[in-house]
Structure formats: structure tokens, C-alpha cells
Length: 115
Length: 114
Image 1 (cartoon, rainbow over the protein chains, first blue to last red):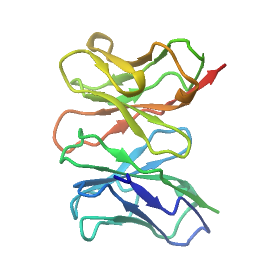
Image 2: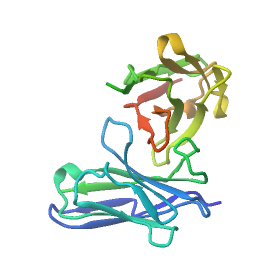
Image 3: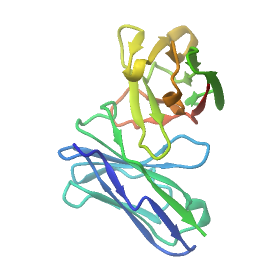
Image 4: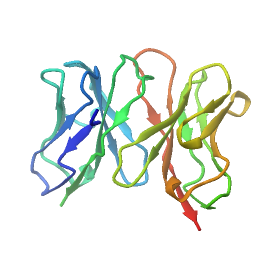
């Protein structure tokens, strides 16, 4: 079991550019979560998938944020027209079960810097 | 308002000394309770969780936590800290009820001195 992986680990972009992050969950995990973590804060839930269905997206920070999990395996998080306030660590987690209380396994995160 | 609070931003403990990290929550009903640890360059790792039953919960790496309903607290403890325990620790809650996400505190950074 290789754990949750995220790519890239670091991304530097200019304001106004689009960025896309990838998350590969632990194989056979049904649920996949995205979080954002800013400096000095705990992770903040953004959205989650159960298999390929996105069951909650109201917590996405704006309509510039979107996520997909097309085949119920890996997921992507896209931020369009990035702003400096989007600079943060973006975390992905997966779990085998179908409840929020099932143990979530986190990836190392993608650190985004918007210049 | 519903919240989870970790009052200590940074704690320094001598190696071999005991540790207690505080966590308080404010919810109408007792939520599910978790402690996670985040080491530099590593993903968050679950240390332990409390759903119901015995209020003293044992976790990995020698950690334990005690749920105290009267104080709305879920403090994390370790009897003897090792240098490798230096990391950031997050308390998290999941309000009871279907479809509710984890809510994390702001974290406590633990430094271990020799």
C-alpha cells in the first residue's frame, strides 16, 4: 500500500493563471477529500467524492475552484484565475468507508504559491 | 457558534517529560473527536479517535486522550516525549449526523528540547 500521493508537491504560478493538482488515493478507497490549509490554520474541508460522485461542493471557496474524479480513482482540483489569496497547502485524503468518521489517510499536500 | 479550540499555539517540552495538549469544542451534542499529527513533509496521520464508550482512548505512538464531557475537552497526553514527537498536532471534530465533514482546530506546534 503506497499511501495517498499528490502531484505536484510544489507549484508556483502567477496571478491569473490556472492550476491543476492531482491526487491518487489509496487503491480501493471509496471516498476522496480535498482540504485547504493556510499558514497557522488547520485543514479546511473543500469537497469530497464517493467513488466518482461529488457529494458536497458547497464548501468550495468560489466558482473558480472545481474538482473531478472521473473514474472513481484519481482526482483533480483546478483553480482558475488564481489569486494571491489562493496561496496555501492543498491536501487530499482518502478513506475506505462511506462515513466522515472513517479514518482518513492524508497525502503530503501540494503547496501553491501565487505571485 | 460551533468551534474547536486548541488554546496553545506552541509548546516546548523536554525529552522524557510528560505532555498534555489541550482541545476544547463547542457543539450542541458531543461530536466525534480526533487527534491528528502532521510532521514536516508528511501527511496528516490519525493518532486516535473517540466515538463513544470508555472516555480514555489509546492511540498510536504511545498517545492517549481523555474525553471529559463536563469540560467539553479532549486533551491529548503522552507520559514521556521523544524527540521524534516534535510536530504539529491537530484536534478535529465531526458533528454527529450524516454528511458532516471534519472540522480542525488551528493546531499546536510541539518542540522537544534535549
